[in-house]
Structure formats: C-alpha cells, structure tokens
Image (cartoon, rainbow, N blue to C red; front, side):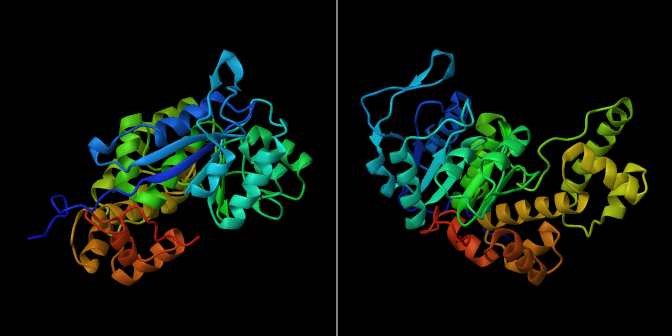
Length: 343
C-alpha cells in the first residue's frame, strides 16, 4: 500500500519575493497577469506564499498606463536586491525607453544572479539594458523583425512561447506571458503549485516553451479532425503507463503516422513525441510531489519504462534529477519552494 504525502506535516512557509518593475508605458494586461499569478493569496488552497512588490524609481508618482489606468508603486528600486524574481511587463509602444535607473538596476540584478523574466515586449527593455546581447530571446511573433532591427546583437528565436538564456527569461505575446509565469511557479515551487494557480485562473496548467506561438488556421477538414485528436490525447493521458508510441496514437486516430504527426502539430503546436514526453514528465512530477512511491514505480506509472530513462529526461528537460525534485517539492519537504533546477 502506497504511503501518501497529503497529510504529512508541513514546514513554515517561506515567502517568495517577486518584483514587478514599473515605469510609464508598460502594458496593463501584463501587469494584470503578473498580479493574478503572483499577487493573489491562495495559501488557503496550499499554494505558495508570494510577496509581490511594484517597484519603480519612486513611490510617490503613479505610473501611467494606457486606457486611463495607473499603478501606484509600493517600493523603490532599492528593494530589488531582496527579490527572488524580477518581472518586466511588456510595453504599449515597444520602443519606449526605460528610465536609466531601471536599466542600471536590472543590470545589477543580473550580476547578482537574480532570475529576470520579461513578458512580450518587455524583451525590448532587457535589450535596452544590454542583457540580451549575444543571448537568445523571444517576443511576440509580430515584433520579431522590430526587435532584430533595433537590437541586432540579440539572437532572436523566431518561434517559441518562452525561452531562457543565462537566467533571463523572455516570452511571446499575451497568453504566453501566463504560460511563462506558470512555468516559473512550476520551476520554483513544483507542478502542483502551478496547477493550483492555473485552476484558479481557469487556464491550461502546462504549455511548454518550445510550443509554436500560433497554430494553423482551422479549415473544415481540421475542424473534423479536432475531435479525433482530442480523443487521442485523452486516450494517451489515461494510458501514460503503457509504452505508447506515435504509431500507436496514429492508429487510434485512424491515420498514418506521418499524417497524424502533421495534423497533431498543426492543432497543438507540438509534435506528438514531444507532447507525450511533456505529459510523462508532468505525471512524474505529480507522483514525486504527492507520494512516497519508489523511483522505479514512479517511472513505470509515468510511462518511462525505467528509472534510468526517467532520470535522463529529468536531466535534459528540467536540469535536475527525480530525487532532487522530490526533495525540493514533496509535501512537508523542508526545502519546498527552493528550486533544484540548475540556473
């Protein structure tokens, strides 16, 4: 009989400090996303405790945003050294110059090793600070050429939801900012914490950064395929413990593997193989967080076949090991909330 973690005693919460960097021209939508993920108290649902601060050059002047909105900062830039994570919203005008003190503070934060993340056009602010020079970055697909033109030293990735380079994260437009924020929660606090927040927001808990920014426009034929592909995904999720292959999924859909792969990628933005691996990793993370099952059994239930294979995928995709992940994120862990993922 497996021993669950649900009723294990918990250690006192460690508050995770998050800074939202504010200056005139930032997008209200991105501010709202950051506030919804990091600024809403969900500790009654066993979500992590966050301390979100709105940081600007001074706390006396409201920061104007489009539509007559404004944001009143509650901390100055001097608070940034206390932050575990610094978030930079996108911009209404993507060429808006950030105040020099903001750029200086971001550069110092990166030197200290603080994680920095920019949503959508926030990549332009990081580029102004020189933080993206020689590094990979992404922004909204419609802004890629603009970012390349104004910051040619940035290695702009043409198609992804979010990426990381040297502890600097950038995200594509709008909904990808939600994906990145949830990924950062998952990275620092575990899959269950991210899922709790996603459920509260009624959004998908898991979209990988390598997924395409947008999918092909629907046609009558792809509309007819949609239900079939949804059935295949549900079928796979119920049978992750089985040695499923792309050929198996294609047979379920009544398609050849090549046709199935093409339709699956067009509908989801991810290849079948990558999607299946992502789901197995997510299943293993939940088992490591929620149960005391031995590693070989976790690997079997998640469909990896062996502990060695699971360990290899954890190392390549999460930059950690299953044992380190369990030590950091299992219920009652003294290190819960301290990410084992390498920076």
